[in-house]
Amino acid sequence: MIRGEEVVISVESLYKRYFRIYALEDVGFIIKRNEHTLILGANGSGKSTLIRILSGLTKPTKGYVSVLGLNPFKNHHILCRRIGVLLDNHVLPWWMSGYEFLRFFSEIRGVDWKIIIELADMLGVRSYWFKKIFTYSEGMKKKIALIQALASARELLLLDDPFAFLDHRSRRIVVEILKELSNSNVTIMLTTHTLVKGLQNIFRKAIVLDNGRKVFEGPISETLRNFYLSMEVM
Image (cartoon, rainbow, N blue to C red; front, side, top):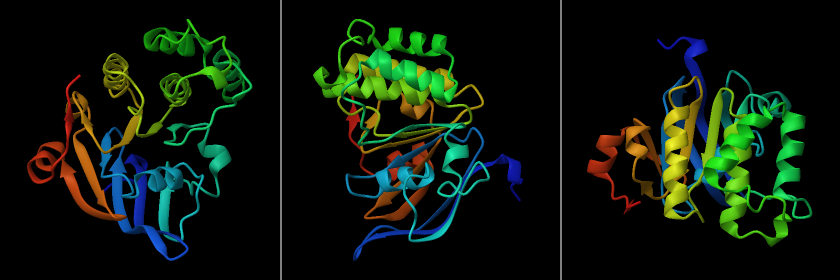
């Protein structure tokens, strides 16, 4: 029996349908505190839909979802102050600079500005963060979005494809940040279709999605033995 206070995410018989197509179909799993988990699968397997449901941005068609003991859709305003989220299709205010956006984010979410400065230095964004966001490359936008997600994660961090558009050096830095964060009280869930080197030392559990269905749940080592995943050398 798992004590309620140890469960961070609980999903049972989760379905999400868009018109006649199911993005998620009968998905279920439990993630305990500090049970850092990779959600693996090809593009279109349902990973992004799952993250949007867990973060309270999308309502499921049916099924049970609990995040930190809350219904994420009904309690999104409460949950957003306890979790950090990076969406795959993150949209930043193009008319602001990266600095202005992160300053605003820091104030409304009560995030320590020193943490944002530290992350900005590690990811090397301070040389351009006074420029307007509409001038940024996709990689620059991803770094700004990553900073707000990493800085705001108090109990749970949900990252949807965080390595897209990043160069190898930046990917290595993100892996190091996640490694340090994994030793805190923050539980991490990360989706990817590519196993970036170093993640297997942080994440012990994997859930594999295929066409909206969960086809595997277990240790990373077993995942690598039973499923083909491309390994990126960093």
